[in-house]
Amino acid sequence: MTVSPDPVLRRGDARTSAEFLWYIPNEAAPGHRGDTPVTDHNSLETLAAQALALEEHGWKGALIGAGWSRPDTLTVATALAARTSSFEPLVAIRPGYWRPAHFATAAATLDHLSGGRVRINIVSGKDDLGAYGEADEDQATRYARTEEFIRLVRRLWTQERVTHRGAHYQVTESTVVPRLSAREGRPHPKLYFGGASQAAERVAATAADVQLFWGEPLAGVGERIDRLRDLSARLERDLPPLEFGLRVTTVVRETTEQAWADAQAKVERMASTHDPSHSSFGRAAAGQRRLFDLAARGEVLDDNLYTTPGKFGGSGAATTWLVGSAEDVAKSLRRYQDLGVTHFILSDTPYLPEIRRQGDQLLPLLRD
Image (cartoon, rainbow, N blue to C red; front, top):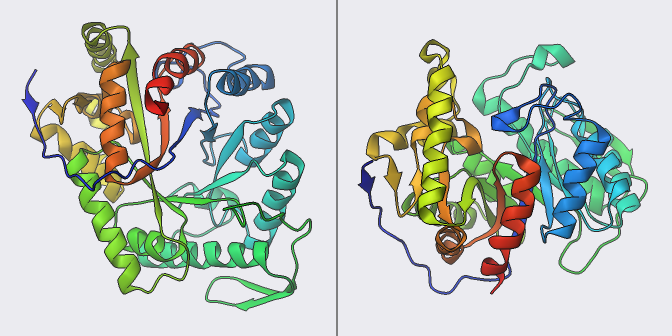
């Protein structure tokens, strides 16, 4: 194994109160990313057991993944909110699949019924658009529509009798019911957003509440935070300062040696079934390509960012893994926090046992 250290960019003591969420896969097929492949993997009982375990073991909530090939995310979030008392679903949704006023009303209803527990992740990447009646668009048009969607949803949540005539959406005298209850520091559900292209960063800098990063090395995340802050200033952002989040796989074991042994064994299993002809590199979005490129710089970057999974089918948050003991991984996450990251979405499989393990071993170290 080769280790290539990256410089650590310090931003001073930026450790304001951080929030830690998990990931609920919301998949039609069992065995997602090594999860235990049981027949009732996406039943209400199975998913609710994960949400209840998140409450019990110290997590704030969980991201629920979206896509045309998955169960409807808002429906799943509604069911889980009804089974829990503090669990906060981070609901991934796509403009196009939803119209702004329809979505704003549905999300406001769930926020009302759950006592203000809703968060939203706006996904702008390509999907099976034709399947739900949308046409494919070039990148500039897609992100322009996303920005208009975000801005209009925020207006519908915070204003009444909204009239809007935009390039992509129109509403007339629209008032969302029920009205959102403003809470301290939260006028409406937080709007998370991801993307690494110039078009995506412009949307984040001007319209989103939280920019999500994949598991890049510290230097890369630090550079992007600096760029987004500068872009926010140059584009005269008219919202509170942009916040930052990290979505990454965390492989945590009792010892450093055991964590690396288990991580390498997982990668060996991935390699044994990987078909290189099915590589998605050429079709990957800008952020995913950045992750794939990391493997050329070394198997391990910084102290414990494992890049090899991306060679054998790992994608998104599974492309790079933070590996080690709870102390090792906590140290790495605190370094991201020093850069300005305050929202963390972690996961490993099998999901339910890892909710408990990392909730009990990792989270207390991050709260000290």
